[in-house]
Length: 356
Image 1 (cartoon, helix red, strand yellow):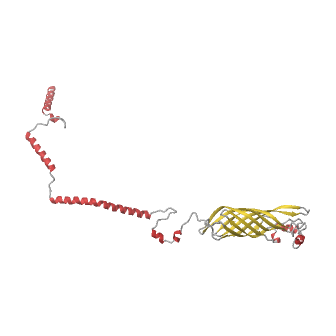
Image 2 (image 1 turned 180 degrees about the vertical axis):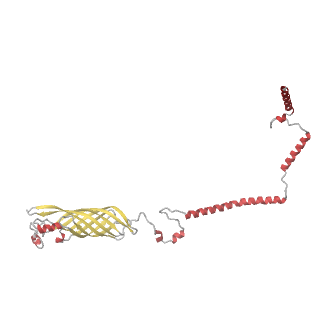
Image 3 (image 1 turned 90 degrees about the horizontal axis):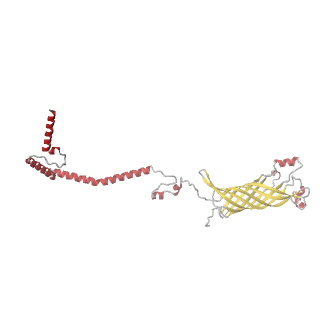
């Protein structure tokens, strides 16, 4: 029974598939169009034509609406045309804002000066421009090139165990350039008698039969060659900058010395008696001239173009002949170390240049 029903349904479905194949055809397949009434097809064609006409025909409306639309459209174009100018204005305002911000928060690096208007630069005085400017490297205002240096000085000799000596003198030098120079120095050391004695010498004189052989240098004259290899500057707070240099010198000259006849108790060789007995063996070597050599160095500070101060340390060496009680003549090397302080004056007062 059930089998018969299934066969009936299958036959029915097959008949429907044969009669109406378009119902089961997919879109785009080559199935024939569904069969229908010719009148209906004509009506459908007419509807399609009306739709095409509606698409080609412009939309109907009032002329005033069209005019409004035209005005709106033209206004839109005008607004679009005006938009570039407004954009340029906004760009200009933004640039001005950026420039004002840059000016307000501008940072100037050390050593740089802000740019000023030409008129402001002309109107500002030269003093205002220099005010507040600190130069790292200052100009060298002091030159020794082809100048004379005159230095009066006072000195002190204290290296002898028995006596101390004081000196006054002067030196004059010529600077070939800032490095090399030649100088002549003359010093006078007055005989101050017992004021030259140290404490040890006074003890020997007062309570001992043995007394030292004391010789005093009275005059020194030397010619030296000097070199100044080191030069520099020192800032005295915010007041000024001074120049200094270190120098070394050496040379030769003469020295004059006299023996102290009072402490050795030789009255025949002292005072007026010396002129009478100077040719005797005992008094011949009381007063002598010596060949002397010296070497040393110093420190020079210059405050302006022609005035300065010198501190000098120098050793003088000479050999002198000494008469002994046995009648023989001996040789003794004498060394005097002098420290002197002097004021330097340069001439001409203004520094020369290589073009002078």
